[in-house]
Length: 331
Image 1 (cartoon, rainbow, N blue to C red):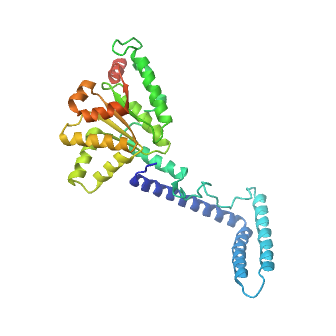
Image 2: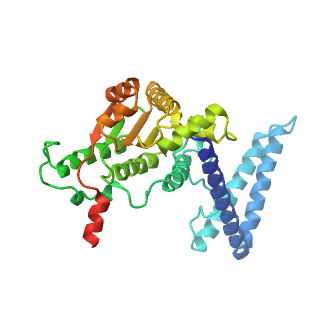
Image 3: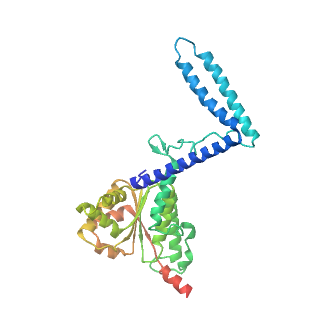
């Protein structure tokens, strides 16, 4: 799984802050119990001394340490039993003063060997969602809120079915894609006019895939191509390098508004690099465009269109502009 370094640093910072906060809360709990029952504090102090004595006995030369260690072990068990009894008498669980990790799998380290633990992945997903929310409306744009009422149930001669039937099919494909996403998932091309739900379903997919711990990058075609150009000509302080690296390496790239950018030889080259590199690396991409097939053919090279036609599943969006329908209903 691919992680963005900047987002992972932010996730680790929050992870460590929460870990520190839990430790401070535990110390406060411990102090409160010591105040109510000073004997428990004495027991904890004796237990720490007992451990030091066991270590000293094991290191003592010329004597058999086993009898002393066994006696200290018995003393330790008696002290623990007394502590548990006192806590029970106070109406508390007998393990109330045992500091336990929130995540038993990794012991609150965030890692299982070289792999990122699920607990840290959750922090990463949260940071990623914050960033995506600045670009997409992840709050309301989700599969559960998709409304088919905006699509006509009347047959469309060009589609062969009604816009609503078509969108039910597109919706099912997008939902399955999101919930079954893996690094080997294929790529999608969302086509159709403005205001037909392409961004809505893109955001819905991003929300689900990000929540599952995968790295997701959303960007407009114009902006990401400008990052490629800035990287090539060294026009910034390294932000372009990071943006390009993320676009090429993330688990899912959502490239919005293809065809609205200024078409230049360089933007065309950047698009081919982006598509070809991600296909070679077997990385999933979702491209959305308002352009028709004819318009795409006028804007882009046969090499680009061939890669898209051969490797992307095309999902056509049809109907009337939903924003216009909303205005009419509100009038």
